[in-house]
Image (cartoon, rainbow, N blue to C red):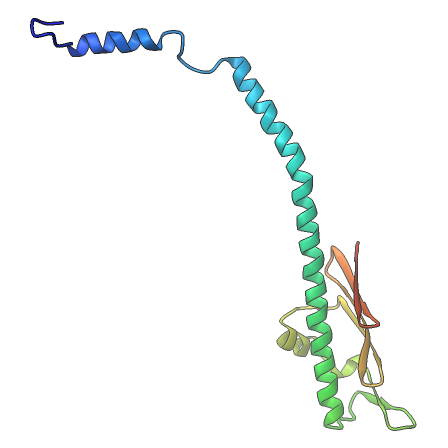
Length: 153
């Protein structure tokens, strides 16, 4: 201290240094404990997160299959309503049986916004889509009896 009772800057630094001695940081044991706790939490959370991802992927393929079925049914109904005979076989009672030759992938893609490529198989009963099987590489979704079921490949 000087004559006026003031503490100089040097004295302040020395006082601060004395306060911090022995309390300069974390010990190795403390750091290891924190890392072990973080590893345990990660081990618990990762399986839960992958479960959510799988459920989301299943819902995605069901939605895509639903879009494709609705698009195929729309195109079939339009063609049947307009009495387009190209690509159709008719039963004895005059009911049209659609074949996949009437619906192209480009038409399905334009209407459903899903590029099914050669991963979609459609089956008709009369002019109604009765079965659809869509495979996106990871999951296979089947539409049958107005229900959608998924299976992991």
